[in-house]
Length: 92
Image (cartoon, rainbow, N blue to C red; front, side, top):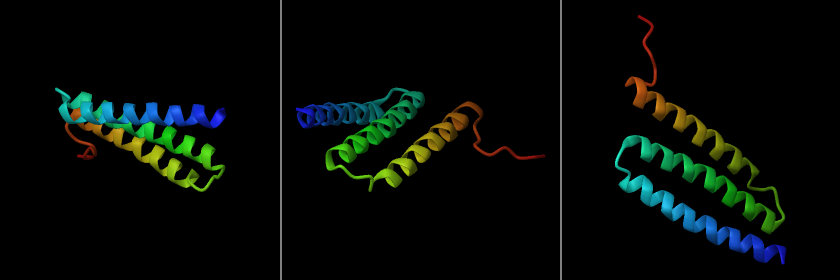
């Protein structure tokens, strides 16, 4: 029964990934696209976590960690670029 629930969760997360991808492509503003990419990253982490539970392994834990860090850093960098126009500030 637990495996069926996890499979249903994977299907729902796949649909959510598709919707986030569409939002990222047709988002009317840059902020919508940044949020879509962040939502894709978070959903992928959950998707891989469910796969780890289904396969009863921790092999993908490094992948989850790297994906989480990259998602966070890219969201912060893109948001900072959107707000200020530069990611790295010059120390003049």
